[in-house]
Each structure stands twice: as C-alpha cells, then as structure tokens.
Length: 318
Image (cartoon, rainbow, N blue to C red; front, top):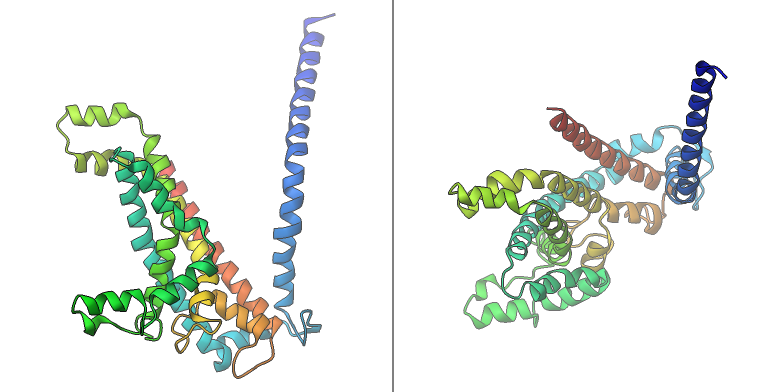
C-alpha cells in the first residue's frame, strides 16, 4: 500500500466522520425544527396569506391583493386607529426602556455589590413577574380606583388632594400609569439578566481598577458598563419584541378599546378588535385587515431586530 493510498483513505474516513457528526446534529435539531415550523413558521405564512383575502369568518376566500394594506393606511376607519395605536406602542416601549431597564440595571448593581438582605431583595424584585397579568391588572385597578383606591387615599391623607386623579380615566395619564404597572411587574427580568452579566465580569478587572485609584462610579462606567453592552442590547431587543406584542396588561386594565378614548390602545389591542372582536363602527371582525395588521407588526419587529443585529455586528468587527 502506497503512502498516497493511505492518505486518501484517511481523508475519506475523516470526511465520513464529519458527515456523521453533521447528521447527528441534524437529528438532535430535527424535533425543535419541526416544532418551530409547525407552530411558528406556518402560522406566520398563513397570516401573510390571509392579508391578501377578504370575506366573512376566520378564513376569507376572496382574493383582493394589497387592498387590505391600502385600506389600513388610507381608510379613516382603520388608518386613524392604527397610527394612534402605533404612537401609543412607541410611548409604551420608551417608558419600558427608560424606566424598566434603568431600574433593572440599578437593582442588578445593588444585588451584585452584596448589599445586606440581597437574597430577600432579589425575591421581592422578581416576585411580580411570577403573577398572572390579569391578576396584576385587577389588583392595580383596585389600587388606582379614584374613589377608594389606596393611591388616592394616601395622597389625600398627606394633603396632596390636588394630585388625587382618576388615573385610568384621564387620557393624559392612563397610558403612562399602565406602562408603569407593566414596568413594576416585569422589572425583575432585566434585573436577572444584568445581574448574570455582572457576575461574569472577572474580579481581577475591578481589583486592578481599584488599585489604580478608580472610584466605584468610574469602575462601573469604564469597565463594567462596556462589558454589559451585549446584555443591554439583548434586553433591549426582548423589551422591543415584548412591547410591540403587548396586549394583556392593557386588556386587563383598560379593556379591548384601550379606554379612555383609545388613549391606551396598542397594536396588540387594535389587532384583537380588528380580527376578532370587531372595530367600531364596523362591528363585524375583519380577518383580512387583522392579518394585514399582524403582518405590519411582524415587519416592524423584523426591521427593529435586524437593525440591532447589523449594528452589533459592525461594532464587533470594529
């Protein structure tokens, strides 16, 4: 047997081994791939297909092309409500980004510092996230009741009667209040993500900074914060996706119409009324328009997430 024959045989064996490894990986990935295709990809494509049809019931049969999208962006029945919901969703997202994630980072820094009672504090911060959104909405509606709710009763007790407002009945405050309730419930999730990121930072880096005379703030800003940027980006994307799809907290606290006067209406509640409950003055559900709304929501999510991925990739390359 010549050396060249031995070499070709070894290369063939190596090639077969790599193919076997790939087949094993595919075998393990196949169940998850099937579940994803069945419950994620197919419904997405079905929704996209429905957006090109009109008709009654859950399966409209009359093909209308892009007419549903034209109606969504030009017909006042749909256009005004859609852009109102889009603007409210942007405000809802902004409040979560500024308040929820900032508080989550602050709580994570306190917990990572080993503050006394950090175990109990961690439990208190995360506990609301374990409760049902419907329960949260019901409890806060009681707390914010303008007549006998705890918030207004407290304000009156300390002499701040002029601040005792109908929080969920005032279009100026309703969306902000509901957003802050949502922040209170979910602030534990970014806290846990940030805490996990902080705990992975080597102690040697902070010790070296301390030896060089850096203050706690300088250590955080110049060492810990840059190392947390990937986690911050991931939390921002999860916040974006969750807020664009938000529905349950508004439904629980302000109803399907986003009362008062649609001031708390989000894309999720607008989609629900359009496709399932029926939108005033058209009381009949319109699955074609609803599918168009769902497709636009998907496009918003895709553009936002893609922009983040491209930006992150560029920073990594630099």
